[in-house]
Image (cartoon, rainbow, N blue to C red; front, side):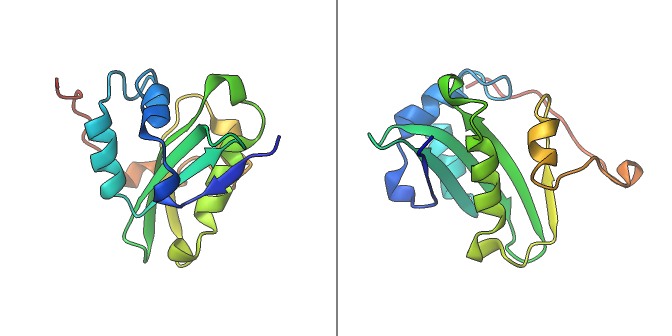
Length: 140
């Protein structure tokens, strides 16, 4: 499948991104305003585009661009899943010149462990060292 992977934010189609993220289990009901704020506050944003300019994939990276990066909102439109698009976006992000110095990458996934394993991710080696705060998503 011929898909263009790009970090050019001018190509982003927020309505397409919203359509995908609003039904994702981790961001039900997310608004376009929230998506735009997340994009503005991200170190890198990646999109996957068809020849007709339709956006079929999206991901963001939150990072200090020195040591640490968190990969999130990785999503591919339902009709285009299982075609390697997500994996291509992750590899694009991880090899991006802006993030070349990163040596600690993190992500959270419920059901795509196999996809991320192909990109080099593995279970936490020292989970006992990690802590988190998980609050419910605020009503908007």
